Image (cartoon, rainbow, N blue to C red; front, side, top):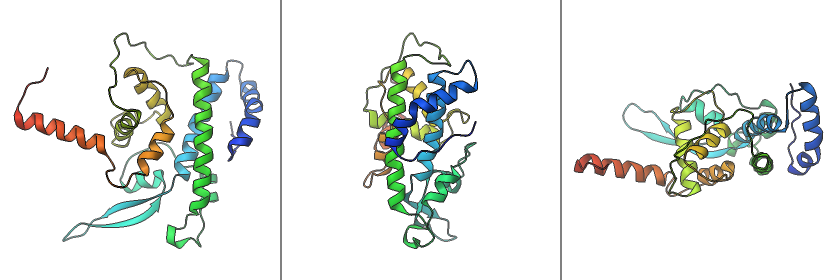
Length: 230
């Protein structure tokens, strides 16, 4: 079923009920939760397409390693770093944000990118709030009787999960929002907007991966000290 692309939060809220009604009319067993999950997947892809940031990329050289800075979105980042994905960027969004006259930002109109990511973040947060209000899942996850309790911050949790996703250590057939949903359940983490946290991570400048650094140091210390921790 083709989806209507809505690029502002105000219009999305106004058209939500109509979109839900049209979705449920397609098949008798579709419901609001099915609609929300479908919308989350769609707008997550829209967000990742429009989320263009300046990235430092390694340029392989015969004698030494050098870097170049380029403006790319999340799908291009995956391609450059040879991270497999069975998901394609949204080409309608790509057409909206490309502008060949913007040569200083590699052909991207950063103002439009910022407008779209702002709107998509609000749409995704709106849908996540709607979903949490329903309180059920059309694809039930097995209940975990003895959950592990996450002791870090929501930002650290988002960093860990995103690192696992980007390193292809989790199910590649699952979209990002589904992985976060299951990881939150397993680690007993209260629901939060991962899109907001991931945007915060992408905007880091001094230390891009503080949690990953701490994990590496902690494990290295354990290996070198050969201390058995139960």
